[in-house]
Length: 537
Image (tube, rainbow, N blue to C red):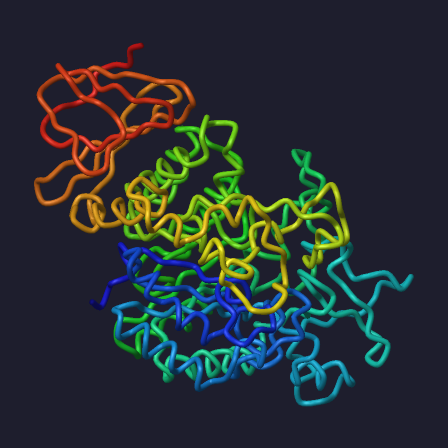
């Protein structure tokens, strides 16, 4: 149990949208507790709760104004304790989101820090003098647009904010800040949480000399953030020493873990994941955006997995296809499938075959699609600022739909904070629970199959060289081997095997006379000594 996280199935809950218990249209902790049986029936080992702490909600809780209390929108500390107790009764671990790279500008720490340059917390945030012409100290941008600096007239200095103006960055260089953050985490460890998901874990430190970032000549996206290579504003080597302090804290408690969110993409993210998880004194795992992109090719998935394993053979990853920040994967990858439900079944088969832990985002077990919202329905700051070029994150955050015919899908007796559209309502939990061939049933069966196979849980991985669009690899543990094959296209494909083999698990393929036939978005787990020789139509 000490390393339960190594092969864990983690279910991400976005509290605002999971279940409302008091009729205000916003999900809460008692609502989550009520619905934990659903998570247990799915086969999840843990839940990850997006932020539930006291917050002005400028960024939906990722702007924390009190690190050791629950926001009244979600309930009370007693409600949290009840949730943890019920989860543990069901054998479910509880992971909470910790946002310690920045706080809310309403946090008492910042209220004191911004007052003047001599108060006890004057150096708790990142402050800098203006250039002689009054402009910001360097060229660093905010992720959400504009410069990463905001003028504070009382101090006659700029403060740094990697995200919203209302989210000033903490100065983690300051030893007092580190102690305060560790104390806040200890508070929740003492309350029984089993782990932390560390938001923007590669943003903790900045270059002390505040050097300008160089340009990124390869950027072609609609955002301004990508115009730079952020070598001075994040991904700093000084981060490692602080990660060691965090690890030492969790190691004081039994069977606790940390998974860090790496807010980068491409090879940089893979390198950071390897660096942050190598050895036994850094993070237990890293959570990457690498599989949250539009890319849906065998080469992409192989590069991500092999990159981490080659960069840190003893490191550990947590893979996910959807979360609260990106377009849901059934919509994002729709061009690669003829049927979204078929794609959803293939997605969970792939995820359950990958090494490491996996993370599911609420609703994906229903094959839930991205909601289409109009401007008047939006709440997400980037969307409100850059619409329609940037649609924002509201489309993946709409409420869970529990009962097809109930008011608001059984989510709330009041008006939901985001609308429930007909396309999402059609995928209600109760409808799918009554269907043996539903996406929900496929998730339950596939997760159960993963748990029954030591090779999928702990096995080594070796990729097979096959032409696009075929992804194939073996997983082997204790002398048992499974060959995992996925057809990443809407067209059928076939493979020839060298010797006898058998399909196992909920495969979507046929095997006869050493020939494996895969339908559109088909997949197979093959046991025995059969090996793939070549592709053939």
